[in-house]
Image 1 (spheres, rainbow, N blue to C red):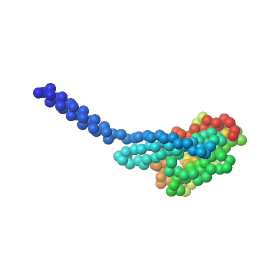
Image 2: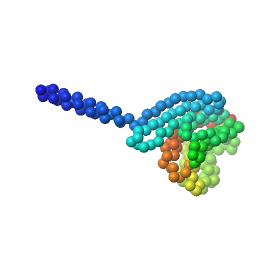
Image 3: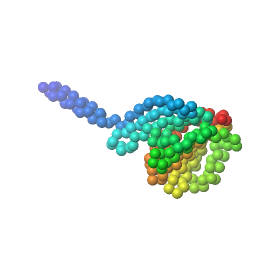
Image 4: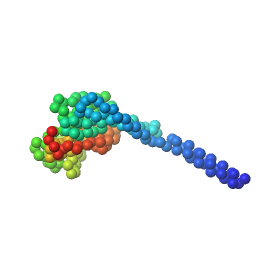
Length: 196
């Protein structure tokens, strides 16, 4: 009888603990691909969901690939295309509420800039920068203008320079900190040693 009771207790505990595990799922990633007719863009959607317990918004990212300069970046699908220059050097996106903008572009490195010289020029232009850093071939600078925060990352090569600049309201700093991390991770610049 004791063995039966102990077995029942162990089985009950296992069932109870297994049932609790059903609600422990915190994130789910769903990746779907779609192709577009535009030569310079490749659309890939990545959806990141969190449970109600964390109260974090669901953010879906779409991939943009530039056909001229060869860089790519994933940006929130809540951003819409504001403009694409005729010369094919990038894209300007804006949040649906118009409070934030993301510019992603490439330029030829006609002046022969290095990461150090590029950072020096940017720092001279934005004297109130709160973040100035460089490593290897990239530069990050962040500054404010009134109630707007600007965050720029540039990757400098001998042939070209690829850059993204995110501008957003100071009041939404926490939201955009997460987005910046994702932009940083997804920003790929394989063709910077070539002029375009």
